[in-house]
Length: 508
Image (cartoon, rainbow, N blue to C red; front, top):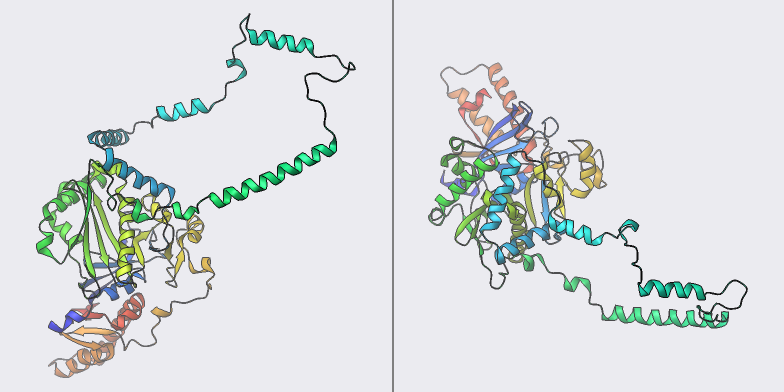
């Protein structure tokens, strides 16, 4: 199949139901469709993402949104319009402080906090700093004010002043200034207002525009702008999964980090995370590498975070024709206090912006799936400029418009929240005829109509004991149903992707 390097080749596995859900731990509540990707062009995989598909290794899957227990909505963020929030800036600041002054004590404190959490200890009271701040801000009550001591000169002077105050009807009060005429008061108020206008205009002219003082995300990230006299150094290395010679240099460290992460965060047993599983899940990729547009090119990569020559995090990602797509992140649990999940997303957003400068078509950063009921996913909705994928029309809708509806219902038609019609249909998934669907049969590409002719008509003529016409018609009906299901889920990309077919497919 030497010609096939130009094509995407997939093997549709149909829909699977009643599986265990990893989000709500419900047994039998997970429903999705799946297909095995032997090879995928980056443009074709991007089209599948726009229809709700994601990959895990070479296996691609799509949740059956209207029936699954935890609907998963595709989420993406426009890199150019993204602005970090206050909490995201705090994550960056924490990283900068650690690189500048951090030491082993930070790590030890984090471990101690994790141990307390695992032991179900009650949360600690406010820290000393907060208590000091609150104490300094409180005003003393009447009971806290000490009475004056006898012989206090201040007390005596106040008593003397009270004795000097004349009684009513004995003339002007000597303790008050002489009264002014109304005309003089009006003039003073007018001059005061005029002076206030002058002061306001001067302040406006002297004040610098706010946007000039704000730093960009590139300027904030400490691994791009290393602080002076920093105790630590954070370095990012982008390694292509296809470049096995380069990847093998850090293969051992990367796998050991994955194993440590799975055991600490997901409570896996060591036997549950062998190296073969890690390789199949995060190293093997169906994406075809393409370096013609820019360096490092399109394909699958491991974005490695090295702290003083120690690997502390790995972000698995795909660079596509329009997207930088996050696949998975695993990190050293000892450095959990650095919020590496948020920090890696911010650094990959900056990477997306840099790729956009080299290739203007790359505009969005995809963060996988989003589920409002899943606590671990809620941070994704905090990225400004994010959008969710409507599961019925496959259009993108701003996330802030979706959250209120998703808090009430797990499954929603999102396009109506952005002014779309409730009657809008999925035009990309509509097929009047399946003749344009591409198939790969006996190493030869056919359109679906020619494939049926070669497989059922010609073979029936060549067989010594051919099936009856009724049997052939039934097989054609079943295959039509399966191919239509695949084409509806894949959309018009089924005109480019080769759907692998074999003799065994007669039994589907």
